[in-house]
Length: 104
Image (cartoon, rainbow, N blue to C red; front, side, top):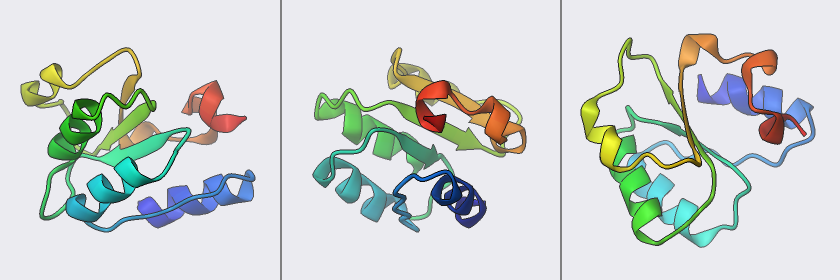
């Protein structure tokens, strides 16, 4: 899923970085100045929940779009959600359903 989404974003002119596990994702998210982070909550080693928590602990206001193949979102996420967090089931992601800020 990550590679397919990355290719679509690249074809639209975006620079894209992919991390394959939560520990790397958390480290990169805190070191690089991103305009948007697309985060899978089912990452190995460190979950996407923990990555989001680390991002918000550092007072980062970067918008985060959380992708999940889960039918419902775990309530553990409630403490990390802010107005700059979007949750979307992965099967709904298409060019038309991405936020305007991610498309332009």
